[in-house]
Length: 429
Image 1: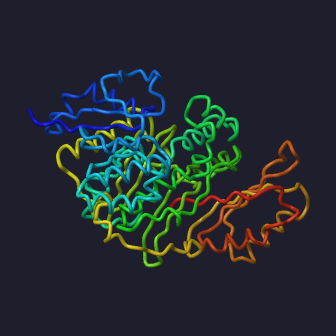
Image 2: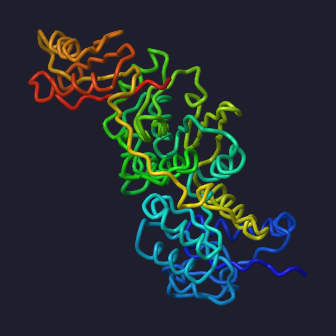
Image 3: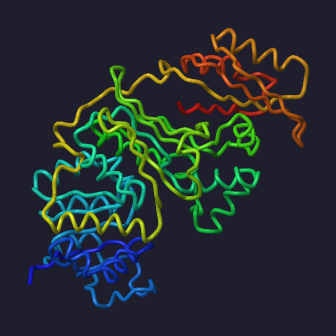
């Protein structure tokens, strides 16, 4: 019988348990596709006694997670601990240093240390795989790295955070405000007790930096991603977008061009004619535009034990087949260093919402700031008074440079007429 691929598994949370269940359920099929069985031989987690709904007594238990890297009877280590540093990074470094392949779902670690780990894997002639780190069970990493490898990618963008998309979909469907829907998402397990990484766009930015590196052959540059989340979005913004023929989605978008590498996570108004407008719930979706293949849409479950475990085991199947290849589609030292693009030079249309005092002259003040900054207004909407006596004013601009909108908002900074921070959303073209 062909020697099995022996796996040491760090982390027995939702995804770790899912990996065990998946291999138990589909072991025979996996062995046929991989050319040999895949067996978990050792596990590690914080609490050995916790009931995880799967039998872990058949596996060797290792108290020190980092020690899994030195477990002699394992060929590959799977890391499902999480965190950009700490035990996860220590395990990754130690595993690659000992000449074992490494599989992870840890987008934060890859966003911050991916280049280092890719170099270490290449030096050791082992695999570094991370399909599960972006968009859960959707094979977007493999799709870009392999399926679209012959294409020059012009742009990659999409819905990269299921928590935010669940919240936005609920606000849209039920006319509720952000705080109320966030509380429901937490109760249902779609949002963490501290949801900051999700709702402030950081999680999506981690994923975007990985996608951009693979799509454009550039070094991961998480620090250059401009990030804005959905924390300050109002139900009125959702309603206004719908009236204009749009839906609000948190979009991560990356483009590489003569002006540098552009990366941004930001709420967008998405035309209802665009496929992303119809992505609802906790679903993820990624669009890649290639010069020969055209527009590719990857859509599916972006989180959860089953979908994420599916991506982890798919990486293990590749390793069992001996399919290693560079982690970022080309050797780490050939990844380009591109300066961040100046967002102010980008041209597009925008939606800007103001919460203002209900008094004479406010509209004129806003219009004058826009005029002086060179912003052309396509439409202006004013809604009735809110319970606190303020009024919502929303503007849609004609196409123009983003710098002009930024300058207009700067002119209005500190205005006594404004009762809160303006909400600026780009309109997806």
